[in-house]
Image (cartoon, rainbow over all chains, first blue to last red; front, side, top):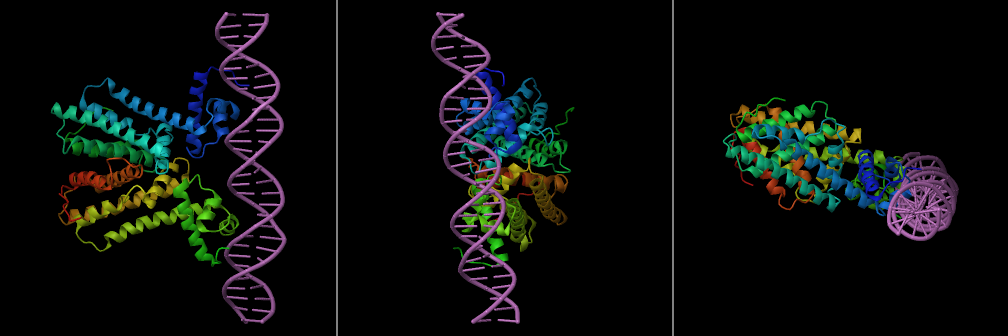
Length: 203
Length: 203
DNA sequence: GCACTTGTTGAATTGCCGTTCAACAACGGC
DNA sequence: GCCGTTGTTGAACGGCAATTCAACAAGTGC
């Protein structure tokens, strides 16, 4: 028998187990027993904590998105140079490789958003938040005279998020010649044009 | 009983039925009976033509991608002006609205590409073909002195395809303020910078 | 240390889905 | 118009997964 845990701990475990299961089988293909196995429990135990599996999946995905966004914010937290901020942010939006769990799950959710209004709403929110994040960086850079924006910050921000999203899909799908480094260069190519700034920074 | 049809006809029907079923339930969530119902048949009849459901799904998706690409090529077939070609091509890569069946299915497949190597390969091929399509247009425009490319055509082509892909996802997910017309403007914003051309053309 | 609550199991139940197959109906060659 | 072939059905079977629940074990208050 699995060691007995208290409610909040076990629920957190289950959220993580659900994430792993979804990455392996897709959000629509997860089986209750798979989540249970990932958590080292029986299906009954899972049901005890989450009578409806879809509630657990939703919670797991919500938490995942929150973490993804928070991690991006954290990474630019200590930086002051707008150029460095922009480059680091672009980098943090891309998967590290094809096996990057966070991005893979986001891609899965993106796929189901056409059918699932809840996931569609979640992803829309995430998109807009990321756009705002870029807008802040862009306008800060413009205010300091480092960037000369080619157009309004919302347009540039949306395009930047769109590009990292799309290349995330390509990388996760194992494009043979388009890896994370390549994608970064492609997005930087746009960012340079849009900011009128060479964006040279140490890796 | 459903009217008896000849092999090739019925198989074509099944491919279409499979497409509809996948759009409703996702590529990973389709049930044999759902495909049968869409086709107005029983599960046995489906199995008679496709003993393995995944073969049918693959065939349906392959056909769908082929059609999507062919349709884009067809739309620029009669055009000669590089500006018009570029604008029309951008427009043809976006869904008409959130219910656009072709794009919705492509999004679904993109979501499963992290797990499914076959679909990943299919999408990779489609991506590269679309990039080539853009490259041809870009270089033709540059040769005629209409475009002044800001960087190599592969980079611009990749970014254009990436943008339309990403906005396809947003539109399908029903972003409240980012519809097809908005997406077109956003992509055009990049295309103008990348081609050094105002890209003004009648709708 | 006793009673009560909380977390977990394992077995039984139910329902659905894929699969198989015998029967049959429509078609096509000749 | 007869006969083999092809397409389709419906019923039967088998398996798997969700759900339920009685039993029990591990904490918790007092």
